[in-house]
Image 1 (tube, rainbow, N blue to C red):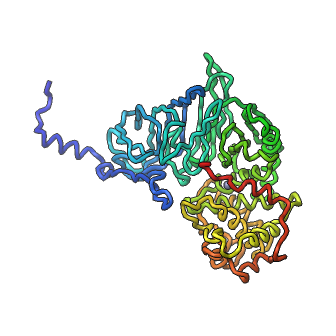
Image 2 (cartoon, rainbow, N blue to C red):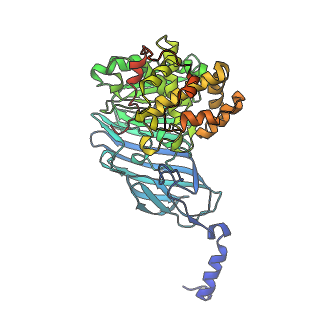
Image 3 (tube, rainbow, N blue to C red):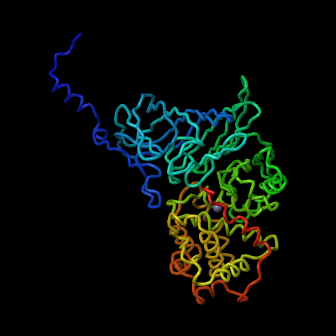
Length: 496
Ligand SMILES: [Zn+2]
């Protein structure tokens, strides 16, 4: 029944006037945040504050299904926006209403809400999805690691695409509730605090909560049959570690290393300031890879890290990242030295504490190890390029730069910088250039030229520059800790 007698042209005009000005200006959000190394990682137009993931995973088939609810704020008027995701999507809702969606590229999910979104508005996005993550190839690979008893999501920079839709860039950090249902007798391990666990009809649900800002690549999930240890640090933090039941000959060494987590975190707090999160731990699933990763509050370790016996050095590295990389995250992936230079230097400080070689001795050794024509020196740790993001030089030359800084400004200023930086930037993002300015301010010395030499020059620093290292013997002895540190070199060779 027609109740209105308005000409169609007038109706269209009325509808147009009813749209707020900002929504009328709505445009699509960018398909990336503009990171030069990875142009289509993350997305523009909104900022996620919270991820609620409610998942179900069946180890026998590697089938993952779930519902993700994202809470976000728009930063522009949006006609549509993207999430990064590779699994199959069955439904999307924005603010409770069904939204249209389409795929583009190899990991972009384009969402068109039923009406444009104003700028500065809180929105909810619900995505229902499913898939077999080990079979889903994006950018030529899958990050999902299959184990004999389940699966694991832990990789850098790409990990989220295979298990939850996200704004996949470290500049958009958020809190997480990750709830995972798995068959009884199997465990689901993730970040943060285990809030609750319950069983019903043959399925056990694990509810994990991360209440501090967390980057997408630092969210992790491991499903399998684990032995779980549950302790509390002297300061009262819950420590949950998990070990696959089938680690074989590596089981003892893995536990003898990862069970040192609380001790190492306490020691690091004495250098970097208070531990930035409210939970601690680590896990060792039965994966065939060789790397480790600083997944927030609960690092991932491949069993191969312990193939030659215990290795506390790798635990030191991943826990150092909780301050340098996790609490203070990089702004662009080119800032990777903010993470890796410091995590490697923490290994040197541990060696120094253990009487197995000082930072100075390790620096002398690294400097002498690589002759001037070694390609090692071609990599600039301050901007290594996407192909060299995890090159050895980012770690070893990166740590060398810190020993040089220590010698240049003296121990007092140096250790004040190491402690004040994570405190000042807690929960945020920072760049290499930000660190240079910070170190200048804290030490009261101009350091731009110094850092250019150590971080931004594709050549071995010359003898006068290296004088900052106070180089001792021309052929320094190999420090005792060298082999153990060397064993962690491929710590972030993530696709091996
Ligand atoms: Zn690292």
